[in-house]
Length: 290
Image 1 (tube, rainbow, N blue to C red):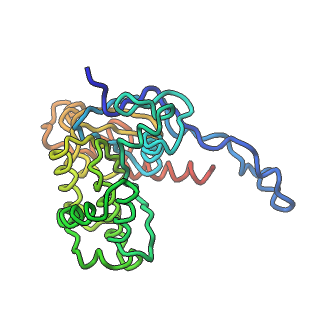
Image 2 (image 1 turned 180 degrees about the horizontal axis):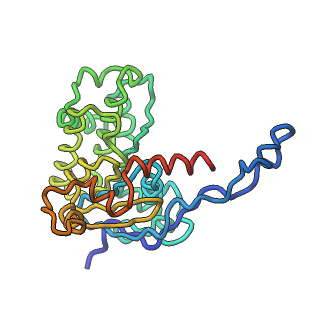
């Protein structure tokens, strides 16, 4: 039997709790230490275990600060888990990181570009990094941009002239240049207007269908998760609290109510005990205290 596209087993991640740099501060800043500014390590991911299969769009749905981006960074080999293991198509993300990187691409909520270069120049540069010739990149780009609803004329402008949403579209275009077998999309529609969001969502589904790609999508957008994902995992305070198809998750909390009338917001509230906005407020308090 083929290995899952993504498999994690009991992954834990902590931040903080290392060397106490505050003890090196001179007076009066050393009072920060006495006032409790130094905190213990924050448990960001707690015993996270799940599996996503080839060709599946798997959603990780949770508030900002719930651990979604940390999970993506571990899967993309940018962070090491403190315990547990994560595998991409059977390859260990720690011991076989080079092989893993050749199979994946990632879109973050805060992409980086060369701001004084045009969007096309940025894509040409990153395409060469991926091993494509300039001719091949130029052949592929118009089709990708058109499917994202991005005008070619705007792509010739410097990145600094583009809106936040337009830059996010460029990040999506950059990541799909290689037609990777696994895409890690970390809140890819953040900052997009409703029409642009629909363009990106349609493009994600099209790429999955055409290339049999596996896609891990993190979001706090309930409607987006239900629209795109074959299965969804709810993550709260670093722990996966529920997993299933959108229908199965709604069915789980129905208790005699019509399943089609139950929203993902209702499911999230009933399975986590809070609204997603409340979970975000709680996460912000934890981050502020660290």
